[in-house]
Structures are given as C-alpha cells and as structure tokens.
Length: 133
Image 1 (cartoon, one colour):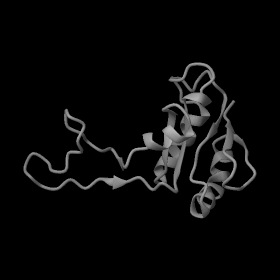
Image 2 (tube, rainbow, N blue to C red):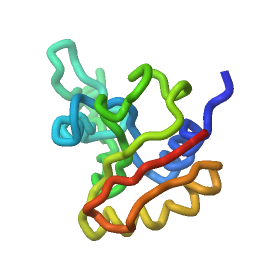
Image 3 (cartoon, helix red, strand yellow):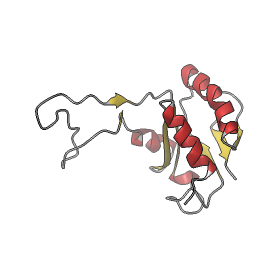
C-alpha cells in the first residue's frame, strides 16, 4: 500500500534524526515514558538493553534527542489506534522547551512540503495539530 502523507512526513523527519511515533501509551504523560532512549536498540528476553555483541564488543546506540520528537498517544487516535490511514488528523506531542520549539518551527516547511497542514500557535504551551488528508 502506498504510504499516506503522514507516513511520508515521518520518514522524512527520521532522515533528519527525529523520533516519530504513533499511538503511544495512554495520555501525554504516559506517552513521554514510552519514547525510547535509543534508536534501534536491542533487548534481551528479560527486557535489558544488550550492550555487547556476541564477540564482547560494545554496541553503540544512537540516543533519541528529546528536543526532536513528534508523537501522539492513544487518546489522539480516533478510529483504529494502530492505523493512521483511516484517521486524517491528530494532535502531536513535542518538547515544549526552547530548543524543542525551535526544532518544531524549523520543520514546519517540511510538514507543508509533504502535503500536510498544521495548526499551532508557535509556542511550547500548545500541541501541534497535523492534518494529512
């Protein structure tokens, strides 16, 4: 199936080091705890981070920059929480501190370039709403 505009936006942002997520746990507070510490981390059966490869060499993971995150949570998913194809807009969480606001402002042209629209007051006290219909 052809990716929708939101999926293309997420793919584009990931190229620039953004963490993008869909349908994180519960609410904004819980969802922040759901953001991973690392990109592509590997865990053992007990849930612990694997820090060495099979030869004993340290594994270096790329840390997620919390000032470059964009995700929603269960309460934002109106239709099928696992499917962003049916839903056409959502509010998204981001880091509302100075650096996070600056990073979000920097990607507004990318949001539009990917064919999406947004509604946001440009401040850290309001979540951004993105429409990808």
